[in-house]
Amino acid sequence: MNKLLTQKRISFSKKKILKMIKQLLFSLFILSQFSFAQNYGTLRFATYANDRQSAFSLTFDDGLLSQTENVRPILNQYGFKGTFYVLPPYLTETLPGIWRYGTWPAFQSMSLEGHEIGSHTMRHFDLTSLQWGDVNDDSTLLYELYQSKIFIEQKIPTDKCISLNYPYTLHNSFVDSASSLFYENGRTLEQVPNDSSLSEQEWFGLKAKVVLFDMPRNSVSDDVDELITFLEWTQNSINNRKWGMIIIHDVVPFNQLQELLNQGIYEPITNEWLTSLCDFLWARSIEKEVWVETVGNITRYIKERDEAEYQIVSSSNQLIQVNVSDNLDNTIFNYPLSAYVKIPNEWNYVRTEQNGVIDTLTTIVTDSGRVVLTKVVPDKGILKLTPVTPTAVEDEIQFVDKFELFQNYPNPFNPSTKISWQSPVSSWQTLKVYDVLGNEVATLVDEYKPAGMYNVQFTMHNGQSSSGIYFYQLRVGNFIESKKMILLK
Image (cartoon, rainbow, N blue to C red; front, top):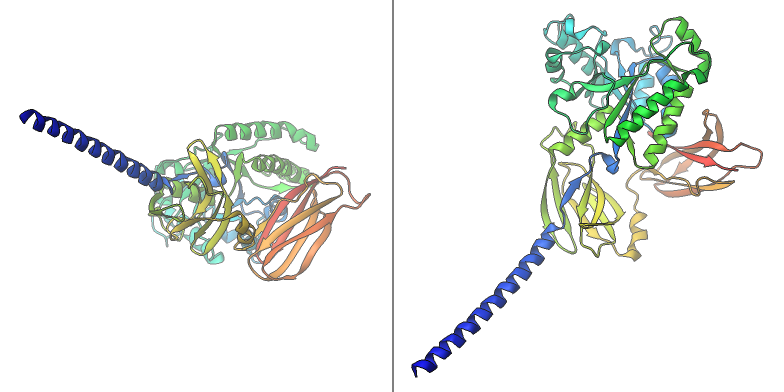
């Protein structure tokens, strides 16, 4: 009897152990599935916007007339935005102005186009020679810094002035501590690029390279050596994933260069030289190697990226919700971050929504699973991601929530190509084609249109133009964007 009871106990113990093992395995399976589901919504912020390899800023000093007359159309043709450091009291309302300085209406208009208007202080004094003082004493450091910022923000109330350029590029820790009270960065001169993450001290010592030209400069080809050297420097900056900058003052057509050289103007460059640099940057940006943007917006992106935290609010096969925050001043730091978000493997298309902004995106398969590259603004509400069926993708994409000018197709073309764009507002819309010198080639659209998506066929008639680079530019209200296309006969 005892032997039989013992056998029963052993048999019961085995069954109990097997049952416990089965329960444990099932629990582990459920837990693994839960953990996998919770992995949906995991974010990885890109180093630079749109996951570009590097960044570059075109900066222009002093607020000169040549910048509004010559730089502005060149940058706008490429869709690039520059940072223009002005001396507020020296800009006038009309021409003729003071010496070679520009006008406020021109710089205000450039601000509406997306260019940044930064501060070069009130009177271009050597800041290291000034006493701390206060904001109302015009002989002191705080006055030069604060009053310049306020002056600019009164003229351009839609933007915060966050970028400073030290006069003569001179600064020290004393000046930096004062500058940090009013600005988010300070630019100086150094012949190396900036890292993709910066300390507080480094933010007030942003490095920008100036190009020094050898004499004589009797032809455009005389400046080619300096161009090649600078392009090599920029490519090295790109390869090392750095943030490069250039310092430029006057920009004039080559036929006006000698006049400035005779006046002893500091290192003027030609329209032709700047255009060649923009050609290089544009080609690299198309290949996703470089992000060309203002000093202010790159500052916003990097600081937001380094401070950003996220919480997965919900995670399932049908809905992912993520909250992103950065604990920064939302009146300044409101630039969209680019982030890769982990999503279920069966999601081929994703609809994203944040604060009323909706987009439909294709997804990417990586070694760690399927992800989508999307944009999210910290502290602007929950980012929601949902799957979109292939049959609904076309309808989703038709939802117009932002301005966008698309790359023409085919490109290169001969003799016809299609240009498409979208506008979220009803407005007068203009679409024009220009040659590389800025001469108008054709007006394709010049009429009032409701919000929506549009396209137009452009044909370059035989004998009208030669092979080469052309630009098409869309204007809808204050929105202006340009793209390059190539005619190849």
